[in-house]
Length: 459
Image (cartoon, rainbow, N blue to C red; front, side, top):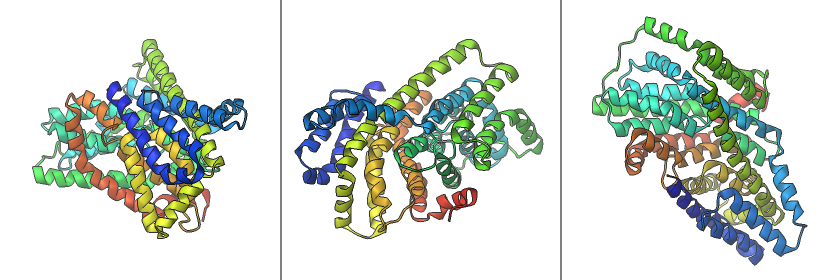
């Protein structure tokens, strides 16, 4: 998996170069060298963070302005951001939920709530992902944690393994849309004066809409394939599973409720979630041993370091783009093609979809926000940065379900023990409801901004 992922990263540089090709022709050869340098470093297997930072350093040296030490200062300044403190805590909270056995209780509660529907375990899969989305903020964590439980349960119940993988993959993308969301934290850092809390609130309704659309798709499949109802509805079973899961369900209440009520900032909510998960795992359920806690902590440190290195490298890269007015040149090129806001947004969505095929989400956000945000906020389009953030994250989540990168597909291929190609084919039909929701979110701002207006008093 690592080798295939590394090779696919090289292809991602082609998308970056294509996006900037027109503006590079205007700006000059030296800036073109910056993109060629990134392409070369990715082709020889360099991580994205090193490719960005090293290419930027070489550019500064060749340009002779400013002193090379500015590169370090810009990189340090890029990660010296209070919202980024939320990242390790949200990662740790999600990992603790999986390790402490909290996900099993969530799945049983979702099964009691939705298992009576035709194709019940498919609906349970989506419902559990919605609940878990309020804890982890990462699609891969959802796929790797809940996915193990969900795919086994659906296989044991006689569902087609491909269908089980497709539903699990598609539902995992809800995780970064419903708050909390790691990609939205990164977006807020890269987009000046954009509130993490507002982004979290804006993602709530689109996330629920994704769940409804996936359940509609599952219902259609269930009727077509004559999937049964997995169990009769039982209020006693529902109440019992709710009782067993009540403490587990307290985590999304703390995170989402605390942010929406204004009791917590997103970072404080992440810290509270970690503390709550530790109490559940060590004191209440007693499933979290010292060895497990140590492993979870080391995994969190590793994942956080990778993310922050990408942010640091992208910070100097974005500064070079901005200082050379690349976003303005790219915007001018877009507006030369068309001045129709609908066509411009469709073109931007297409660019994001193509980039999502080849690039990991965090890297795509850090590289593309400085280029695309100035375009959508121009008077010709007038999109709110918060609205664009939800659209961008949702778009890039679809990229997690598409080869050649498709990190969720790699995870589920390993979990389900079926070939990667079969995972991709089984997931493809579920892209239809997700792309439909993407179009609705893009062209109906109220889906994202209505709740923001209520919570924050915006117009």
